[in-house]
Image (cartoon, rainbow, N blue to C red; front, side):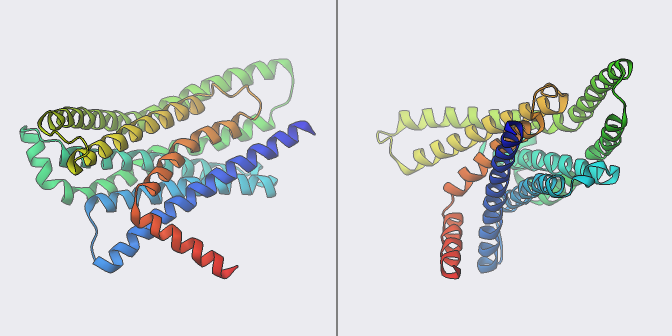
Length: 307
């Protein structure tokens, strides 16, 4: 009974996190949509940010569906097709979120960093036109990299169908360790390139902002000047973005590698940890955007009037 109570508590916590993440990212998309509706155009950064919010929203939605189906329809846990589809969708949304976050960071880096290298000059003039193609390519790459995870549903089915003899248990442990190693290699192939590009672009941007703010503080007597405050805000945002993205990548790597496999409630605890960094970043984006705050206020007023 105590184990069931802990499981229900963890399920409730995970559901609340996913609902908050889904709602927050929908607010970001809705605010950008209303801005596009009034201005008939959006900046490239806002388009990429909307794509990131959609991808993250779908990531939270797939985890919600996973918990919903297996909680209320436990027979679905024995269907290989359902397991494979859910694994593919879950990894595809994770990969796409990672790639789109990388594109967003590269865009900020190219637009803000003022280096006189030929590559930077070319990217500055073409990055806005390249962004839609990069987003489409990232979705295709994410789908391709997530397809191998569909085989994991077959392994889960084999694991549940094995008997409990000592010999079979040893074989099962060896097969499980091998499967986790193979799964981590597949994960590394799909996630390491965008993660390394993200870190390189973000660190380059942070270094440039630090150097630039130091020069501005030396040249300006008023530390509260608008220009200096805006650079500090960008520096804070990108530093937080880097920290949360590193946390998310490390958590996903540990989860995929099966290091938590032998702990009780490892799947639920792992998913709670996995969902926390993108949730915190989404909430930060909401708190730092006046358009999203306005959309949130309108939503609350609408719910209050409806109730």
